[in-house]
Image (cartoon, rainbow, N blue to C red; front, side, top):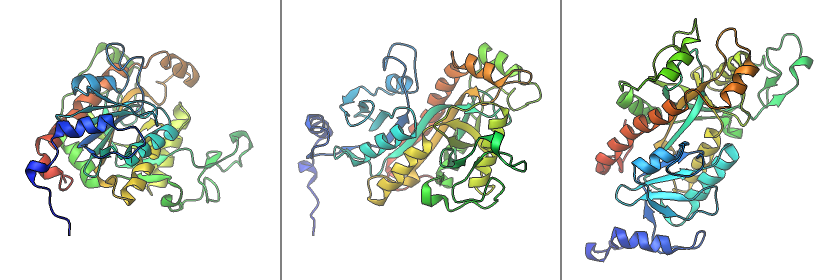
Amino acid sequence: MAWPIPHSAQPRPANVLATVLACQPGAPCAQRLPVKVVIVTMFEIGQDTGDAPGEFQLWKERRHLDTRIAFPQSHHDLFYNPQTGVLGMVTGMGSIRSATATLALGLDPRFDLSHAYWLVAGIAGIDPHHASIGSTAWAHYLVDGDLSHEIDPREMPQDWKYGYFALHSKGPNDPTPADPKINGEMFELSPALTDWAYNLTKDMALPDDPGITSERAKFVGYPMAQRPPFVLRGDQLAAMTFWHGALMTDWANDWVTFWTRGKGQFVTSAMEETGTMQSIEYLSRIGRADRNRVMVLRAGSNFTMPPPGVPAAAYLLRENEGYSGMHAALENLYSVGSKVIDELLGHWDRYAKAPPS
């Protein structure tokens, strides 16, 4: 039998950190760094600190992720706070980079992620039927928008709504999806953990600003889009194409409804979640991660369609010059996500054993 190591013989945390920092990436390591929370962001703008922030900068600065850990097998080095056990990563944009970065982290012998919670925190397009820019949405379902069949809509039959339809189906009018576990078209996060995170944060007052006030005022006839930023539950569609427009927003709603068999509600659009979650699923099979400890929080930096009377192409090109809700989205991601992280860390003895519910 394995005998416990006497307390006096257990390595001190500082010694563990020093050992891990001395290990070569990809090589065996005598110690594993304990991680309580992994903050998963997708991109940064310029430097990691001191300039215009992307998704990572506020987390690095405000949560004191000051210990740099070389991570050449992925897009961006890792940053760690040895006092809190929080690790921050930047996967790179797109599901290919998010999947490979997540898998690389989970298989890295320098880290103990067996009890870690994963918080994916990123900006997103947001459906004006359901929310306003600056709002943050906790996802229950993650749906892939890439795995599909497609023909040009100019060549599709007259009774087809879209030229885009699910693999292993008979066309867009086929009402029954295949098992999404086969190809990874849809992932369901722990409903108990998602509900817990939402209930913890739903009454938070999120700041407003004149820029997003004027932008949302253009969405006449969309009462949810005209609300100040708020916390909601809403599902996530990940697709490598940056799509936009009212017709595409209709498709996104239908696509999420289809793959969740009517249980999900499309709210945010991004690129990475299904890649990230597929890797965590694989890591869970070998005990290197826990798929029931994953949370996805997206904040609207831009709407998925233009306001009434504005052409989709013109609105998309204007937004690409600088998302109108970018600043609010980043701030609200941090404040809402931090409330959850602080609760986990503040009661770690309890949450290390089992996820909250």
